[in-house]
Amino acid sequence: MELLGLSDFEGAWRLRREIFDRSSGSRIEFVGEARFQASGVETLSYLEGGLLTMPGQQPIVATRQYVWKKSNQQITVCYADGSYFHSFTPAGYSEGTQHVCGNDVYGVVYDFCEWPKWVFTWEVVGPRKDYRSVTVCEPIE
Image (tube, helix red, strand yellow):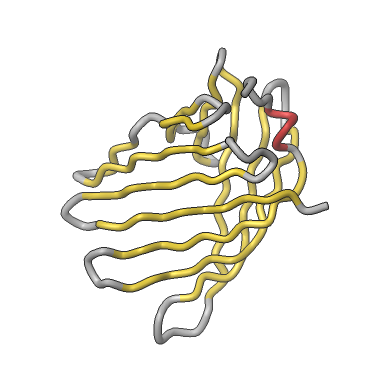
Protein backbone atom coordinates (compact mmCIF):
# COMPACT_ATOMS: atom_id res chain seq x y z
CA MET A 1 0.00 0.00 0.00
CA GLU A 2 1.28 3.48 -0.78
CA LEU A 3 1.67 6.18 1.81
CA LEU A 4 -1.42 8.14 2.70
CA GLY A 5 -1.21 11.92 2.76
CA LEU A 6 -2.77 14.30 5.23
CA SER A 7 -5.47 15.17 2.70
CA ASP A 8 -6.62 11.52 2.74
CA PHE A 9 -7.78 12.05 6.33
CA GLU A 10 -9.61 15.36 5.84
CA GLY A 11 -13.30 15.29 6.67
CA ALA A 12 -15.48 13.41 9.14
CA TRP A 13 -14.92 9.90 10.51
CA ARG A 14 -17.19 7.67 12.58
CA LEU A 15 -15.34 6.27 15.62
CA ARG A 16 -15.99 3.22 17.75
CA ARG A 17 -13.51 2.60 20.56
CA GLU A 18 -13.38 -0.28 23.02
CA ILE A 19 -11.14 0.02 26.04
CA PHE A 20 -10.31 -3.16 27.93
CA ASP A 21 -9.10 -2.30 31.43
CA ARG A 22 -7.04 -5.29 32.52
CA SER A 23 -6.72 -4.12 36.13
CA SER A 24 -10.50 -4.03 36.75
CA GLY A 25 -11.62 -6.43 34.04
CA SER A 26 -14.06 -3.81 32.73
CA ARG A 27 -14.92 -2.83 29.17
CA ILE A 28 -15.43 0.84 28.34
CA GLU A 29 -16.96 2.03 25.06
CA PHE A 30 -16.66 5.30 23.17
CA VAL A 31 -18.88 6.09 20.17
CA GLY A 32 -18.48 9.35 18.32
CA GLU A 33 -16.90 11.25 15.46
CA ALA A 34 -13.58 12.78 14.55
CA ARG A 35 -13.12 15.69 12.19
CA PHE A 36 -9.87 16.48 10.42
CA GLN A 37 -9.60 20.01 9.06
CA ALA A 38 -6.71 21.71 7.26
CA SER A 39 -5.13 24.26 9.59
CA GLY A 40 -1.99 25.34 7.75
CA VAL A 41 0.60 23.98 5.37
CA GLU A 42 0.93 20.21 5.89
CA THR A 43 -1.13 20.44 9.11
CA LEU A 44 -4.54 19.12 10.17
CA SER A 45 -6.49 19.84 13.31
CA TYR A 46 -8.15 16.76 14.80
CA LEU A 47 -11.23 17.13 16.99
CA GLU A 48 -12.93 14.08 18.46
CA GLY A 49 -16.18 13.99 20.39
CA GLY A 50 -18.69 11.42 21.52
CA LEU A 51 -20.13 9.44 24.40
CA LEU A 52 -17.99 7.39 26.78
CA THR A 53 -19.86 4.58 28.52
CA MET A 54 -18.40 2.89 31.61
CA PRO A 55 -19.99 -0.02 33.48
CA GLY A 56 -22.58 1.08 36.02
CA GLN A 57 -22.34 4.78 35.13
CA GLN A 58 -24.24 7.25 32.98
CA PRO A 59 -22.54 7.99 29.61
CA ILE A 60 -20.42 11.14 29.61
CA VAL A 61 -19.38 13.45 26.78
CA ALA A 62 -15.70 13.04 25.95
CA THR A 63 -13.54 15.12 23.60
CA ARG A 64 -9.93 15.13 22.40
CA GLN A 65 -8.00 17.53 20.25
CA TYR A 66 -4.72 16.97 18.42
CA VAL A 67 -2.66 18.46 15.60
CA TRP A 68 -1.38 16.18 12.82
CA LYS A 69 1.68 17.31 10.84
CA LYS A 70 3.40 15.83 7.82
CA SER A 71 7.04 15.03 8.63
CA ASN A 72 8.93 13.36 5.75
CA GLN A 73 7.34 9.90 5.35
CA GLN A 74 5.57 10.09 8.71
CA ILE A 75 2.73 11.88 10.42
CA THR A 76 3.56 13.51 13.73
CA VAL A 77 0.73 13.80 16.23
CA CYS A 78 0.94 16.67 18.70
CA TYR A 79 -1.27 17.71 21.58
CA ALA A 80 -3.43 20.81 21.07
CA ASP A 81 -0.70 22.94 22.69
CA GLY A 82 1.79 21.77 20.03
CA SER A 83 3.84 19.44 22.25
CA TYR A 84 4.90 16.12 20.72
CA PHE A 85 2.79 12.98 21.32
CA HIS A 86 3.91 10.32 18.80
CA SER A 87 4.64 9.63 15.10
CA PHE A 88 3.64 6.90 12.65
CA THR A 89 3.97 5.92 8.99
CA PRO A 90 0.57 6.20 7.26
CA ALA A 91 0.65 2.94 5.29
CA GLY A 92 -0.20 -0.73 5.82
CA TYR A 93 0.32 -2.02 9.35
CA SER A 94 2.50 0.51 11.13
CA GLU A 95 3.91 0.64 14.66
CA GLY A 96 4.03 4.17 15.95
CA THR A 97 6.56 5.59 18.33
CA GLN A 98 6.05 5.00 22.04
CA HIS A 99 4.89 7.71 24.38
CA VAL A 100 5.99 7.77 28.01
CA CYS A 101 3.82 9.52 30.59
CA GLY A 102 5.39 9.30 34.05
CA ASN A 103 6.01 5.58 34.57
CA ASP A 104 3.27 4.52 32.12
CA VAL A 105 4.24 3.53 28.58
CA TYR A 106 1.88 3.93 25.63
CA GLY A 107 2.51 1.89 22.47
CA VAL A 108 0.41 2.31 19.33
CA VAL A 109 -0.14 0.37 16.11
CA TYR A 110 -2.01 1.81 13.11
CA ASP A 111 -3.65 -0.51 10.57
CA PHE A 112 -4.52 0.99 7.17
CA CYS A 113 -4.79 -2.39 5.36
CA GLU A 114 -8.55 -2.00 4.77
CA TRP A 115 -8.45 1.70 3.82
CA PRO A 116 -10.60 3.81 4.00
CA LYS A 117 -11.47 1.91 7.18
CA TRP A 118 -8.55 2.13 9.59
CA VAL A 119 -7.79 1.08 13.14
CA PHE A 120 -5.43 2.26 15.82
CA THR A 121 -4.66 0.22 18.92
CA TRP A 122 -3.01 1.48 22.09
CA GLU A 123 -1.42 -0.82 24.66
CA VAL A 124 -0.84 1.07 27.89
CA VAL A 125 1.09 -0.43 30.79
CA GLY A 126 2.55 0.92 33.96
CA PRO A 127 1.95 1.29 37.66
CA ARG A 128 -1.16 3.46 37.17
CA LYS A 129 -2.61 2.07 33.94
CA ASP A 130 -3.06 -1.32 32.27
CA TYR A 131 -5.40 -1.28 29.30
CA ARG A 132 -5.86 -1.88 25.58
CA SER A 133 -7.78 0.63 23.48
CA VAL A 134 -8.94 -0.29 19.96
CA THR A 135 -10.45 2.45 17.76
CA VAL A 136 -12.10 1.71 14.41
CA CYS A 137 -12.47 4.69 12.04
CA GLU A 138 -14.76 4.77 9.01
CA PRO A 139 -15.52 7.71 6.73
CA ILE A 140 -18.86 9.48 7.09
CA GLU A 141 -20.26 9.99 3.64
